[in-house]
Length: 299
Image 1 (cartoon, rainbow, N blue to C red):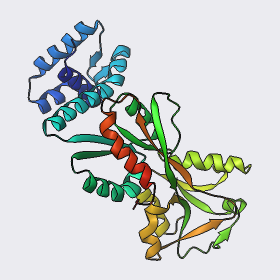
Image 2: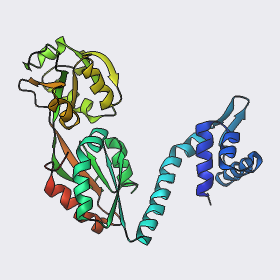
Image 3: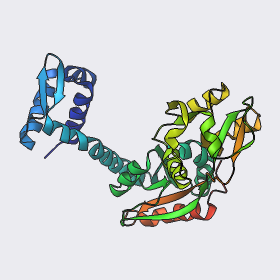
Image 4: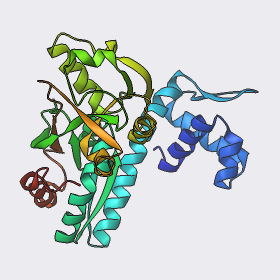
């Protein structure tokens, strides 16, 4: 039977491309670690690693084992966490959400929930919609805030409210306060990458008015809201961002928002959970609180 420690060693070897480094970091001999991997290969019946003077690389069969290793290790960690929580008489609740929601919308309401339900312990993870749906199905997470309805019949979902998206600009930018959607093509943009649900939402909105988001003059794409805000501060372009992420800059009059005529930018937020979760009963009070509060208690 596969040992979870062995799987962890294998994953680390693939990621570092070195048996010696993993052995050193794990404080065991290189020969002992090699024997552990050989035993794993014997148990599975496949060669998993190719060794050469250029390092260690997974075989085709090794790539399959590596693909599933992360999920298996996360499930094992969740089991350990749940056992510990039960021992400490805590209900451990893991929450996934897309990055902007986790960083800017969730903290205030989560603080209030913790005060109301002190017997619960909360862990928060930033994940894409797709990753969250997968984690829910595998019970790696308990709840997930997503920007689209799940297509999995094994998941429940509740409408929470809408996230307000705005077109943000540096206060010194000479763009008019109100423009048409066609006017967007005249200006330069800094956009978030596709790890944020904003892009998928915007592409649909542009298609609805027979335009293409790809026709925007994108100066560059960034992987964080912080980088987008820094670009706006330096007047390098406009950016579509969650309103809650720029409240401080708007209050301090560093940024301004631009109204687009007849072009709503708010999108839906859903709270998803697994129907047959092993502790669905203990999750219900938390779910009910989120649904009842909606977006009114977001930061």
